[in-house]
Length: 177
Image (cartoon, rainbow, N blue to C red; front, side, top):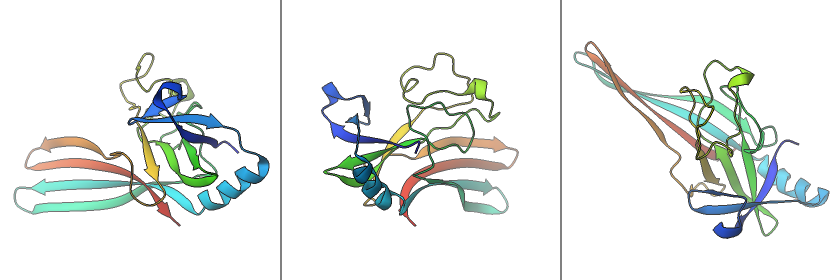
């Protein structure tokens, strides 16, 4: 299983900090891991794209599309190298032996999908050294109760071409299957 388990931790002793929350990697017994994953696999991370389109003559439109879904038992850890456009990376959050959410990569990899352009999200969270201009390193905390602990929306500024303007919002959230 590529997924790693983390607990909430004090920021000063955490393996990493995302949006003000500290996380430490933990080792679970085979039984504990199976119980947590039994609940976690009832959820998926969904990435949606909302395209805002405005035309001088035809008015304003909004299109919502589901760009990708990620199965929590199939994603890599945020401590592993990723490079494919729709490759997911996340660590399973466990509290008191229970699944509570996921720390998930909400940025994007280089659109060319070459392994040599890959990166480890945690290593590059605050350092773009060696990264191409075509990738974004963002990690967000997604809670299982549907209330996200951080803002995981990404906005791509309006682009004008002639009489039309387009902008995009990307949203990641944890959804029960």
